[in-house]
Length: 409
Image (tube, rainbow, N blue to C red; front, side):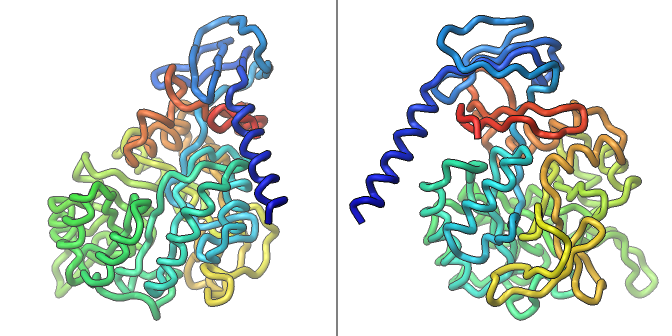
């Protein structure tokens, strides 16, 4: 036991030493919050950005990284991710958490919000426990910035690949126990039309937790009530979400229309090029814009893995799915079962399919999600005083370097 402790202490000391090194990233096109600076330099010290300038800056005793004319970008912020590299957060192990963080960091994610799937209460509490332990050990992957609980309070008819045996109404006794159990819960996705969901949304809002509408068949009026009672985000917009519906000859608008009509509502989209086709990507961009649209992977364990058969959710109790054509599907191919995308793919998709500028695509995976989770004072932009979460990538968003809090992974 003593040898293990000593080894861990050495690792921590090594990370500490790396953070206190100086870094100079130069000869690159810096993506700033309001423009792109040609031939710029970024200086980093003690894990923070201390200078951002056009031209070449000297920095004695610094570790030098030549961007070779490529882009110097803020690190990508993924606020909805379930897994990758053969692991899922619902596996409930520290090793799974660390492997997922490392896999996505290699593709440009520097901050991530681990996300659960529908489960019994005990399964959720186990993930909360493991999150705290894994966060302390996570030195080689994307930073954990809080937990996102997706479910189990969903509409059965909009469950998608969520396991139906766990779907239920919000229970105050249950959710209050979960909320009191951990202060790391930063977001909870709920179907707002379920019995008790409005009261639940108020509680989340009062606690500073993002209440998000998800897996819902609510009509517009129900979505508006939710919006007026604390719900501020729409989970994987369009996916498992109601649009215009006809009931007894009358048409009713749904949650999608609520998202378009209310500027203050933020949306997130799975921009893998499969969940949403090009026309819908363009429509979301045209109406909601880059300031209110976050790109998410929503990736499951097959991200970064060969196509084949996998388990969605807990490795022992989850659902069997297949991956093909760049996406996960239920075995009968009746519905998608999660994404296998990484964040670099999201940016490429928005540029190639939605035909939007690189600058806006990057904003949708950096500044916008950082603002949504109320961390835009630390991450999501290359600015003096911000965490040194920085990428270098080429014109095709192939990541050449990932730096997290001043450490090059």
